[in-house]
Length: 362
Image 1 (cartoon, rainbow, N blue to C red):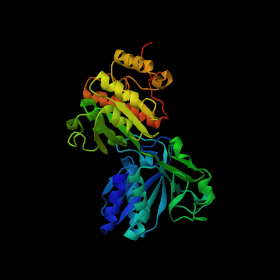
Image 2 (spheres, helix red, strand yellow):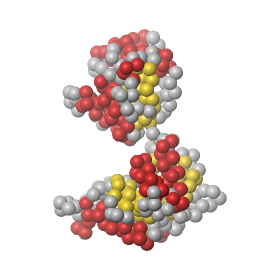
Image 3 (cartoon, rainbow, N blue to C red):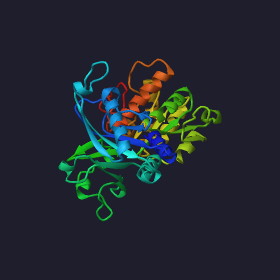
Image 4 (tube, rainbow, N blue to C red):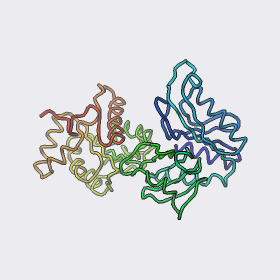
C-alpha cells in the first residue's frame, strides 16, 4: 500500500491523472478482500490489483470513465457469469469498489496524509461511507481516524465539531484488538494496523534469511549481533536498524513494547540463554527461540534455577517455527515467518501449536 500511494502522489505531482480504486466491501468468495487497492492511469495502465480477471477489466473501464467525468463513484460487481475469470472459474461473491479520480496535486492532500500515516507505522483507521441508504450519509466519503479515535482528515463527507459523523464513530473498531476490515450499515472500516518490530538476535544464516523476508510481510526488522560483520548492511539491506554489541547489555538497552516480536537465532547455547534471559519477561508480544528440544530444555531449566518464572518461560515459542518439514535455511525461515504472521494476525494463535507456546516433550 505504501508503494501504491507513493505512485499515486508521484503521478499526480507530475501532471498525470490517476483513478484510485479501493475495494471497500466483499460478500462471499472474492479474489481480494476489503482494503485492496489499484491505480488506473489515463493511458489504461495500472498498478496494484483487485484480483485480476474480467471484474478487474471492468473496474479499469469504469475508472477510465470516471477519470473523464471527474466524479467519484461506488461500483458494485456480482461475480457471476458476467464477471467470471478468463479460464471460466466464477467466484460467486460480490465486490463494491470506490473509484475516485485524482487529477491535480491540490486533490491529493488526503492521500499525502494517508502515506505519512503508513510511513509512521503507528496504526490508524480509514472509514469509507459507500452506501448512502444504509448509512444515512452522503456517499462516497472517506475519513482518516487515528488510534485514539481522533479525526485526521476527511474527503467529501461532513465533519461535525471536528469529528466524523456519529454514524461513523459508533461502529469504529478498536485498533488494539487488531481487527480485520469490516462493513457496518453501509460504512467500511479498513484498519491499517500498527507495524510490529521484529528483533532478530543473531545475524547468521537463519537470521539473515528471516530478516530479508520479514519486510515483505510488514515487519520492521532490527538485527542484533556482537559481530560487526554479521550486522553489515550488505547482509540486511532492508533492515530498519542494525545493532552491534554484546548480546546481554545490548538487549537490556533496547525498547521492547507490546508491538515487538523477538526471535533468538544466535550461534550458540550461551548466547541464546543470555538473549532469552533479557527478553523473556520484557513485555514483548512474542518471544521465539530456535534449537533442539534438548537444548531448549537445558536453557529453560537453567533460567528457572536463576529465578525466571516458569509461567514466563511457558510463553516462549520454542522450538520456533511451524512444522513444515523444513530442510534448508530458506525453508526454516519460511516456517518461522509463517508462525510470526499467524501469531500477529490470529491474536496469538498459531495453527499446529499445542495450547501453550512451549512445544517440548514433557
